Length: 262
Ligand SMILES: [Zn+2]
Image (cartoon, rainbow, N blue to C red; front, side, top):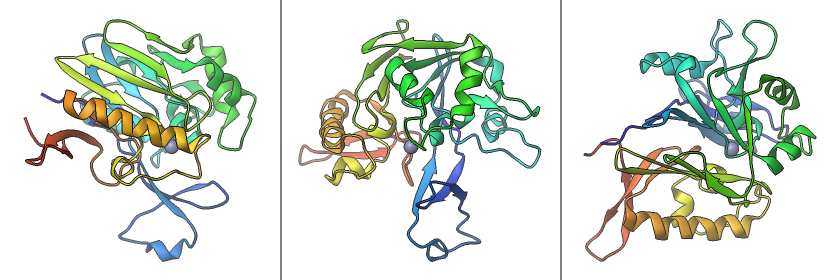
């Protein structure tokens, strides 16, 4: 059985200013935001044998009370922020790192106080030094002080459920995660594999640190994971966010929604 949940934050439009503006298709039309890209945001929650795991933390979007929408989504599934034992960070761009902390009380506090936050050392250094405007350094001051930060390098295992692998591509020190639990193999490729369409439409993305590498990695992940039955988690998907392969009669694989079938 597939046990992974999207803590969907919503759909956002992003223009040259790099501000994420909530996009509600019932109110706005795409042409109201000329030149903007449209981005959906799916942090993922996975109950595992090693405790509750969160894959990336969204923009840190808040409800009308200033409470993280991530929290609301979690409560709805019957979990509390204190239940989270691991926060797995693919990289630290603001659309992934916003919910690492909460500013609900006026000052920044760690959002998941019982969790270890798993971050690549090189990504941390780039983010903390504010190498680009895609990073929000006020978040990292809070994390730095928290004692919850675990810096990892290259590839390795956190325990017998979670492993990480530096893969670069999107940022110089981006990482992917494999999560083995309940006879399932979940794969979180972060922004190297953000949307299913990118597997099938071979293209190099402008916003990547190394677009060719990302493109090659996507092909490798699908070539390995489709026959092996991996469950793919697509952080920026506009349709299937939690997917798995299905064999076609011609021997190729297509992607189906993993939450809809047994
Ligand atoms: Zn992203």
